[in-house]
Length: 194
Image 1 (spheres, rainbow, N blue to C red):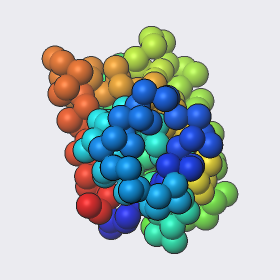
Image 2 (cartoon, helix red, strand yellow):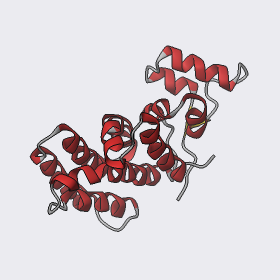
Image 3 (tube, rainbow, N blue to C red):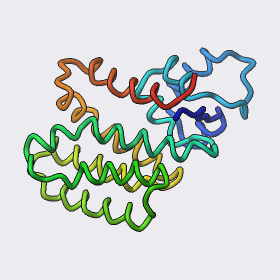
Image 4 (cartoon, rainbow, N blue to C red):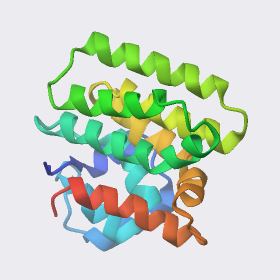
């Protein structure tokens, strides 16, 4: 499933966008771009890069199909760092089950109560993790299952994902930040229409 997820210049300012990055986006959009005119997040990805695109998820405009897409995207971000956790705790499948619960909830296969329970189990796994990278990976899986409406999209696709950049780099064996960002860009492109 793909969706067009948008924000506006007004919403970016309302959420305190970094002035330099905001000005850069405005220069790319052009002076005729209206304050309330929708901006597809793929434009932000193209013009400003992955970090600004991930940040912009906190300022998105609600769309009917957006909630499901945001949940599925958050699950993919969490799954990208799952190998770190599983390399340390190969017999602990709680984070993997939590990611599946997030997907099942997004697809209407389980209730919110079951999703919350899976998230609680993933958070317990996160607290049990010994090192920071493993903890970040497990925490990202918990964030994916907590994804509720648009507030959760901010937490899961924004804060938790940004916190897990190093974990994605490690989990994918990326030797550079660019390689880790490629994983994130791929996930965003998978779900967001151009």
